[in-house]
Length: 128
Image (cartoon, rainbow, N blue to C red):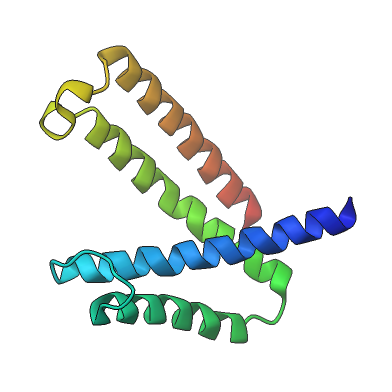
């Protein structure tokens, strides 16, 4: 079971690294009004920047466990912005058209987002 877990953890790390690089390449290409294609120079620059910065950060981390905790704390700070923006976009008739969230769904989603945000703030405060 330990070997299977270790292999699954390794595969998850590899797939998240690939996804991160592709996302950065897509964003960087989008800045120049292009779609993502790995052979496009703008996409390649985005991928290289993303992975290069991550590699540099890894070189400066002395304690991997502390580095993991700090990275997750930073992600928890960013999470409310992403969640509230997504709820706002999916609740907009202008953006979603006929697929817009119902009033009830919007209320539930904002409530869940608020609860998650409060829990993240509490965790962040307790971690400092």
